Length: 385
Image 1: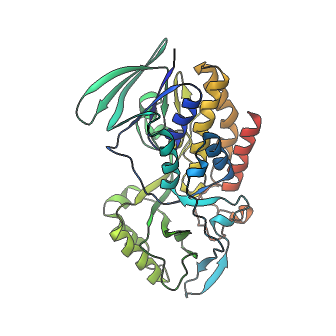
Image 2: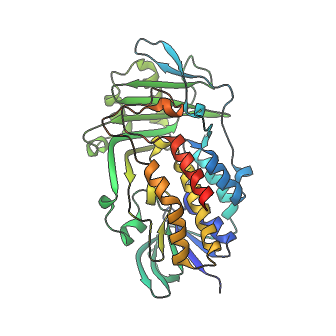
Image 3: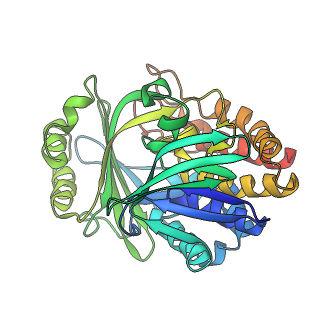
C-alpha cells in the first residue's frame, strides 16, 4: 500500500520534499495556506550543493540562473567615492545568483499535475497514532476534515504552524539577531551605475546592497541593527527605513531605493531570527527548511539548504524502504551536526570577518553565517550518506 505524506508549505523545501518523496514511491499531498501560488521574489544565491540537489530532483535545467557576467561591485564611501570590492557571487564557492521565484518556478513545473496541491488549507491539529498521524485541516471556505498520513513534513517557514503544534511555542526555538531587513526588486538600476554593477553602502550598522541580476532589474536589500525590533513595524516599511537611513550617504542612492520601495508590488520587511532545535523530527512529524534550521538571509544558504533537506529526505525514506522512524533518524543524523555547527553566527558584538569566504569586507557589523563554510558542511553531509 502506498504511503501518504502531508507536506505543509509550497515553498522551496516543501516542493523539493514532495518531488523526492514522489520518486521514492510515496503519495505526497501539499497544503498551502495562501489562496494561490506566490511568484516573483528577490535576489538569492544557489550554492553547488543546491544545484546538485536540483539536478537529482531533475529540475536544474528548468531553473533560470541570472548570474551577470563581468559584474563589478562598488562600495560607496560617505563622500561618494567608489571602491571596488568583492561581491556575493565572488565567493570561492561561486554561487549562482537568481530570484527566489526562479527556483520555485522550476520546482513548480516538477509538481504541477504530479502531486496533489490544496490551496487555502492549513493544519490546526496534529495527533500521532500508533500507525500514522491524524491531521485536522481547515480551509478558507470554513470546512474542516481529519485525514490520516504516514508522515507529516512541516516546510511552512520561520513562524508557521507545524513547529508550534508539535514541538512547542515559537519563542522556544526562535532567536533574534536584533536586526531588520527589507528586500525587493527596484524599478531600474541606480543612476550612474551600469546594469551589471553591484552597489554597497555600509555605515554605522546600516547597509544597503543593490544586487545585480542578468536580464532582470536588481534587488535592493536594506539591513540594520536595532535594540527594539517590535517598534520597527509600527509604521509602513518605507517610513521606518527613511528614518533609519536618513543620514546615510550618498543619500541619493538611498532615496532612489526608497522611492522604488514605495512603488514595489511586493517586498519582504522582517526581523531576522535563527532557529535552533535539538532535533528536527518527533515521531512521524519532521521539519524541513526554515522551520527547522533557519539560516537567515545573511548566510546565502537558505535556498540551498531547503533543496538539500527535501531532496535528501526522500532518498532517506527510499533507503529505509519506507520505515519512517529509521529514515528520519538517518536523515537527521547525517545532516544535523555539520549544519547546526556551521550555521551558528559569529558573536553578536564581533565584526563579521568576511575576507575568509571572499565575501565583501563591507558586509555589516552584525552576526552572520559564512556561506562558504556552510556549503562545505553540506558537501560533507552528502559524502557521509
